[in-house]
Image 1 (tube, rainbow, N blue to C red):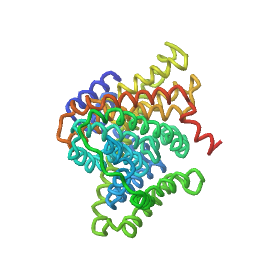
Image 2 (tube, helix red, strand yellow):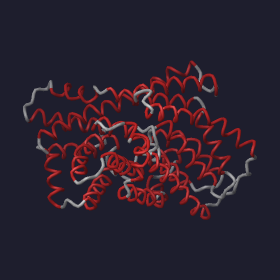
Image 3 (cartoon, rainbow, N blue to C red):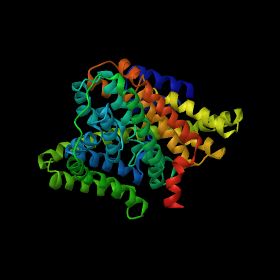
Image 4 (tube, one colour):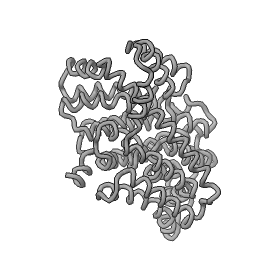
Length: 424
């Protein structure tokens, strides 16, 4: 039955069904064949989304959209250009820097690619950068979004396991910074191969103005993070604070957000949130089926039967997640595999916080690898080139991501240092 379920799921994916519906169809077939009452379907779906912390996801998505429409994207890009524009390859560095700053607002890679890419990819092409390189930089740097807090995948991981959202947010900060710095180093090394010119060096006054313009946006990240860490509000309450703050900044500080635009922004955020919640609901149903068929136990026994060596177990898990990430969306893969593999990791003595960061990092690498690299699709559509071209140009950045993954996997303190300082 499990093999049939997986086969139907894979066939649906090849037929280009959305992942949520692919899961739903395979689960429905299982329920019908096993003659399970259909009432199980809505009950299990509802129990999957009836989790208080999941309410924070619509809040953070809405806050990110409000800040984006409120002019923050342009402010962040301008500030990054002031800092990096005069360096050879400056626009690519500004692209990466903007993504790192925007990551503290959006929490998702795709919104980063779309928002930053729609401005930076045409600008880089205009300055003489090759289209494939401009798209590759944008797609790669956007993967910092799900690592640097606030992070939607980290919220999902916390929901699945009962881990602290605040700890997971902090655990992703240093790995996210390492990713960004690694991308900057690669961009500097590749700059000599790009036929572009350097921009004029910004004055101190322009840099100070850029700091002031982006200050209000960056302040939101600190309010969210330290509000949760300090115990002033829960992640769900933090998301509502972020919405109110984003609306105030967009309407009264940057004044790029209009009241007329609010209904469309809210509706768009609701659509994104609804698609995620449908995925969570169907994935919970799938998880119940897998537990019923004892698949998590079989996987756990299978891996532990091969070896109980922590290093080897981490190698196996990384390989599994890297392969899955190439054809499955991050949230869906987390929902299905994270609880199963976490049990194996904890059994061999791996800290669950560290493992959560490793799992998320593994799966976001898949966002920039074919065949289902969502960020590749978005970037290539903006740059009007093929995904193959973007993939080849992005190979050096992929190597950086894999190197950071190895560091985070085998040096636990990279992900555990900040949570240990603030929570223990």
